[in-house]
Length: 174
Image (cartoon, rainbow, N blue to C red; front, side, top):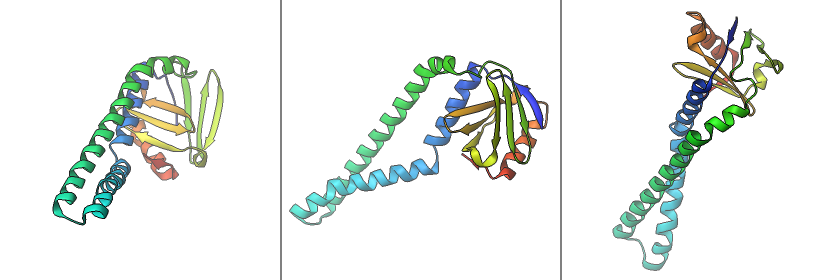
């Protein structure tokens, strides 16, 4: 499968928001929040149990305090990340070399090739980290580099075929 696309700043912003949604609104994040909640609950209640003994009032106070700390922490971290995406996207985008230029992609059963002005990348599936599939674009991650493929520039059916190829490749979907 072979095609040529050019991603622009709007595609880059969409990729950032897609990554944010898939990272921050995922089961893994729910697990992390649960761990933080348990640690906060224990930090609030264990000292009180040691000093005063066990009581329902201490248990409810610990649950309430742990919930407040966890909710505040999650909202604060998510807000910082969202603000960072909104304020730093343009600067980071302008530093990227292959964005806003035509890139030719070749996908096969072994991996992918990307031909662009900065060079040729030949990457086997096992070298790529993961991919994120959205409604309007596909993001393939390789270490700190991303390949953004907007679906609106592809022929009809190519996006579905590409998604099937990626699912068969063994590459992790985020």
